[in-house]
Image (cartoon, rainbow, N blue to C red; front, side, top):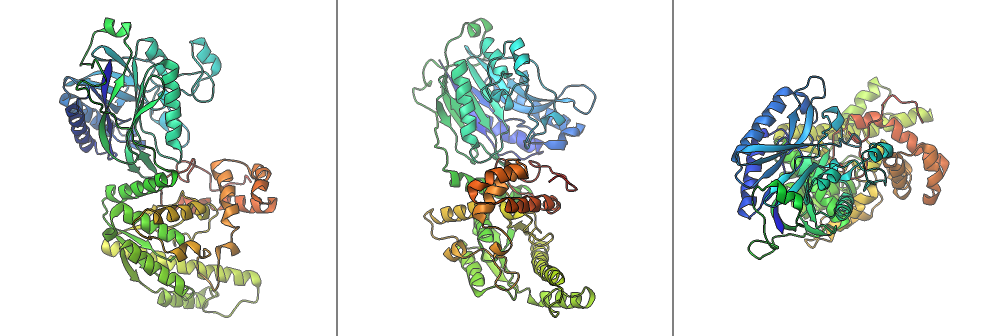
Length: 602
């Protein structure tokens, strides 16, 4: 037999309960028109994921319940499996279940409650939800029984090996320890097909991990697995969709495209079951691959690694801008690689007519950088204007020369080297802050949202100016290491629509150009050394001593490691005051990494 499963991979609007309900009903109708026997949605579909502390508001939970009622009333004989927050009726700070409603014939016919609540990385589910305890009910589709689960339930992280062994647990598909997934009990109850609702955010390489888990689960249990994920940007997170289906042997037989909203159907072969025959039926199943003799399965190839990251940044930027009510963005263009990458991403995300590049040269800006900024804007077809910061720079330097002992720009050089360094740094920061003021003024005047241009490496070590280049609403490449920025720009130039990033921006030594003849490598180690150190310390959570032990492979000595790790630690206050940006690595700054600002541990 085969079940035609509808996969609804939607770009939801978090908190738009009525709008999401309309979107869910439209997707349901589309899947039914394609002949679906069941339509599966993503985790917490009604609210969007993750709702965070909106779940603490009773009115929000009540509104979600009313929206689910509308959705259920809309359903006919074809069941829809929809995620929603369910009130347990209990008192206390944690009073909800993360649930999946099985709706058909105008009502909710059954509810599955998520068992395994992730509380790591970007997930805080134990703050809001209580774990479910029942593996059922199973969903009856004709002569086939479906087991329903939610996200982490498929992965089956262990309680403890001993506890799981006591109740017949099997080795987990992750970590080799005892399994706690409800999938085991569902198959024992007669489930012939497992459907899993997900709110799984993107990171590099995540899709391969998801499919490995599902393939292992399917082949171990001998049943197909349907995995449905949402798509789109939500603050610091971006969801790639990439929904897929495996057969009972663990082969991926259907995969929806990454970063694209889509409703599709997949014909899933299932083995007969005595349990299903005894349980009765709802809906219909097909005797062959498809009722009309044709295949309705889509198998989209996975994106290449750089394409995948670029699309993640494009979708995250587009949704952050548009979902927050903006149409246009402003980007400060220095002629360097970071601002070039952000402008190119924004142009792909919003269209060139909605991107406004602003060159803000100083007395230290090279002619090449000015030319590169203008060339970038011409290549991308975006708006471009030049506003010199010299009048403001001279005025502020003069004020500080009178009242604060000079900045190094308008006063005579200081005799004390330490005082001279402080004056030089003050002058550099003033230039950056003038640019931030100008961009925010243009934002106020024209209603543009300002995109900042700092990359992960420089954000890590504090090579940024607070209230200067951190001034803005969204940090597009905040989680992109410096060397990856170069790779992405080179990749974008190879896409067949002409050179986007000027070659000079790719080849010249990186420089903030805030003082004469300045280069990044005068203040920072080469990025070939710095990027691996930051990755080990920030993403790997190694101590400075552990980084030292591993750093020799990259040519870094102990003094350099301790310098870099100290810079990361003392820059926490800057990051806490900087705008959010999309997560693309295993650990980003923000809700993924929560370090104290006042911190004596080294």
